[in-house]
Image (cartoon, rainbow over all chains, first blue to last red; front, side, top):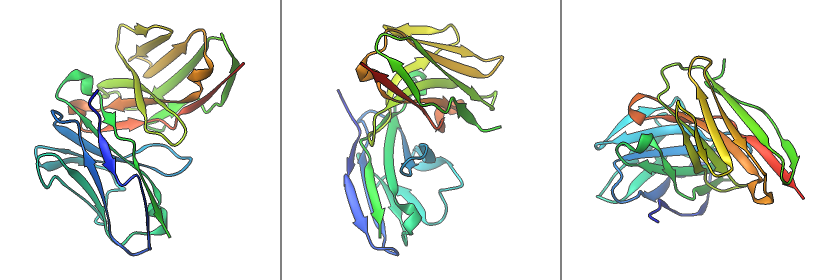
Length: 114
Length: 110
C-alpha cells in the first residue's frame, strides 16, 4: 500500500536554528498538507499546497514557516528561527483528486527545540 | 462555538460493549466528513468517511446529520485493539483544509 514518508523521524535542534522537515507524498497525489500536534493536544492544520502554490494556511503558519516542492517528489516544511513552542510532531499528508477529499498521513517528524 | 467539538472522554468500556461518539461542527459549509483513529504518538489513520446516508464498515457505523451539524461513530462488540483516540474531521469545499477535533479517548478493558 502506498504511503507518505517523512524524514527525519526525530530531530533535536537548538532554539533559533532553522529546521527543514521532508516529506514524500503518495506518488499520484496532487494535494499536500502539513499539520502539527503539540504533545497532548489536537492535530492542527498548518498549510495546504496544490499546483505549486499554497492553497490555504492557518494563523499558525506565519512568516516563520515556508513550504516548497523542490522537485517532483519531495514536499518540505522549513521552520526558521525555531522557538521552544515549536516542539511538536509535524505530520505531512497528501490526497488524490476526488476520493471524497480523504487525506493520508505520514508517520510524522518529532521536533524537539531545546 | 468551536469549529469541531467532540465528547471529551475518556470512555472506559468492557470488551464486547457498544460505544458511541459524537462530534458537532459549526461551519455548515463543511463538505466532507471523516473519522480517524490515532494511537499514542502515531499518525491519524482513516477509519471511515461519513456520508449523508450513513455508512457501515464491519463493527463501525458512521452517521451524518447536516441539519443538526453533527456526526457520530458507533462501535459494536468492542475489542481491546479498539483502544485509541478517535478524531472527527471535516473538509471544506475543494478539500484544501481538513480540520480535526480534539479527539475522544477510548479504553477497552478485558
